Image (cartoon, rainbow, N blue to C red; front, side):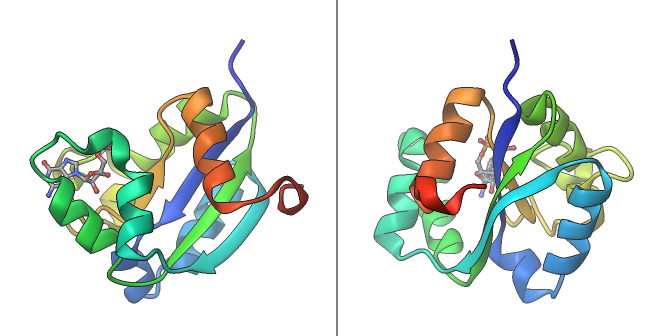
Length: 139
Ligand code: GDP
């Protein structure tokens, strides 16, 4: 059975462009309940740990640098079938390939600076949410 929670970050490009509010509004209007939310900034080491699974990919170094370059908003979201529905809402990794109306189509700048993160599985949603929020901070 699909889980009902996923994890997202509004990434540094979208925060710098002043789009956090627009993105959170679109998320809520698409039926997700915000169960945890904070604005924070990852150190280089923290971004490296968060993206550890991508360590072997050629863009890992650039990705870690970018994700620690400015503030982000981290959030846990609740909805039936959360992981899959949220991936649909954000669209393809590369905004040039994302469908019209998706968050990345609307707000992303490039394949790297692509406005939002969305967990790719229930297991990762739990791990990623736990990276930012203690049990007491998840409602
Ligand atoms: P996602 O699940 O759609 O976020 O995509 P991935 O898990 O494949 O990649 C993680 C993140 O790495 C993406 O959201 C982008 O920020 C970045 N990324 C992915 N592919 C590329 C790429 O080809 N080049 C660069 N520079 N960054 C990438």
